[in-house]
Length: 187
Image 1 (cartoon, rainbow, N blue to C red):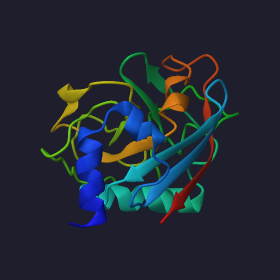
Image 2: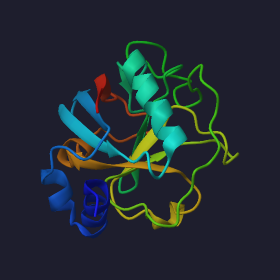
Image 3: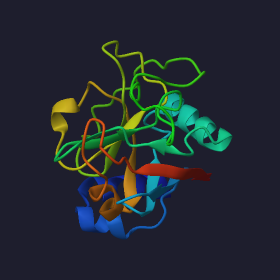
């Protein structure tokens, strides 16, 4: 059995504690340095076998530095923390339109799966009404959000730093949003 398959099976049945103790996954891993109330590092194991086009776009944007200094613009207690608006979500800028933009890359066709569920620490792609409109924005779930299953593309799992995610300032937008100061990729 391959290492990815073993880890995927382990993550599917892992408690949040296990997922938070891991420091790397089979990758690629998205490493997010967060500043603000939630100061710390979040590591996301991306799932190219589940959502190859979405993961490729996230990796490309991270490597370009597009996610650097982007705020968490929509954070709903008990639900999720959303970020990734590279067009309108830069820290220090006018955030009145944060959450309405994407990147200069094309929108992506949905890559829904019935093999995974939105549970604590799962990362999904945000989109507009059109299921094929995901671009750069993504969200991290705080708990069970299985009502999103089959409607949003799952791109990864938080494997380290869920305690940081839990401290992200709530609001739509938060009064003082937390910022992804640096986003890198470990392959």
